[in-house]
Length: 372
Image (tube, rainbow, N blue to C red; front, side, top):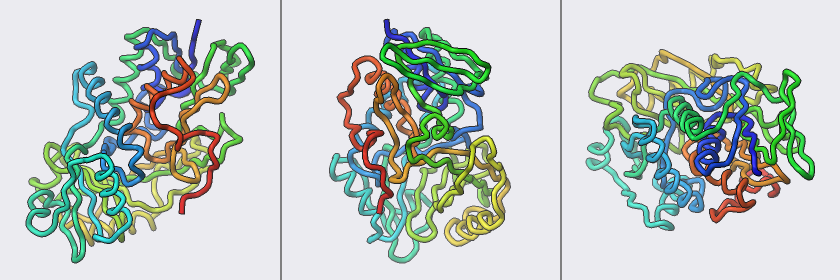
């Protein structure tokens, strides 16, 4: 009989547990902390969901399915985890990222609009355009609440029969011809037929042969100048491309607006040694970006927080089988929005060894080279 260990109960791990348990497959989650903790990559109050995906058209079918699964999790949790306020991409008309968003939309007939002038100002007054810029509006976008989402998925998994061993860090996962052994830091050994490796920023520890880097991602919150702007019920999420480049979110608490500058993230020797503050040079850089392009915010940050994530050289995650293990790791800052469908794909791979979804671009055995 199939039995599954899920190592890591963050975004993808908790969703994998939920989808496995929903199919009646016995599953046990292992985590050094507890679902919803802030030591990994699922922190910071908000995450972007978007369907017009500049990272490539082949993600769009996965995103559409993920949206349906987010709605299913919403219903089970009795609260809104995905708020569909829409989203925009702002940047120079000729910028490659703008072209990539439009290419993904054309490939899958997504209802995006290209806005300028008054129409752009009416749609998103928080994000004024500069000369030569356009606004690409994605009505199917919105924002996710990461911590409650992970808690909801873990709770749904447990309700369906899964178990979660909290505060039980895993030291090693060994596999042989008949199954896998999960060795915990306290010396325990647990036997299963399959294992799912979803260790978040700790991926390099369990997958040392793969070129995975742990990096620090910093978020910065700025106060609003006007109560009418950045309201979480109507303000779209935004990605600005060009110079400066960043992501921006509505105000979750009515006070601070989160801005994530798009810069090379700091490499970490270990996520356990993560410094939660940010270098002053980074804070000055993001404050200058706010002062230059977001007049509705005061450019003095009121909060800074740093989280860890795992990255591959080409910026695409790792999802596939290796013997009796399923690797679901290193989603490179793009995994949260897709976590429910990734969790369901994990369940496919455990149950049948394959999936009908297109995930060839995420194969762990692909040549891992840095994207141009």
